[in-house]
Length: 157
Image 1: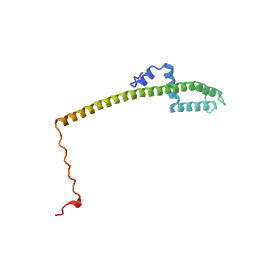
Image 2: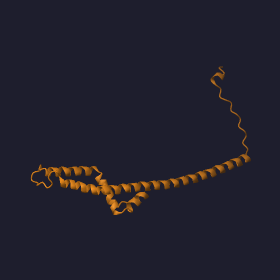
Image 3: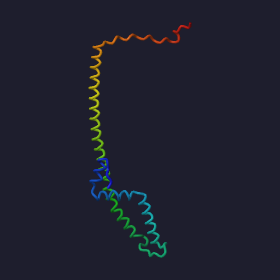
């Protein structure tokens, strides 16, 4: 069995009953192109045999193919509950993922709050340091810098 890193996948796969895992695999196969093509090939061969198109093989389910209809009904009777089991599991997986994401977001929000509080403490300390530095060595007021002369103010000479 594969080992999953994400906690949701780990819980879903490792704690899943065998019936649920079988239902998921069967549903995955039934929903694939491989299944569609395989079933199409089997039905085509079945019909060709039973209409007498393939010589040398005795037809066993003549038209209207009652045995074939019974096989399809049986397949549908088993496929429907398996699909429902797999879809319920998919809904459970979605719910678990959302719960996990919500927990991570709450934890991330708390980390951001801690960082913000730390930043506020640092800013407060810097403000105090600035006050102390100004008290110890007063900074002379800045003298205004004259504006740069514009093109019309320049002396042409």
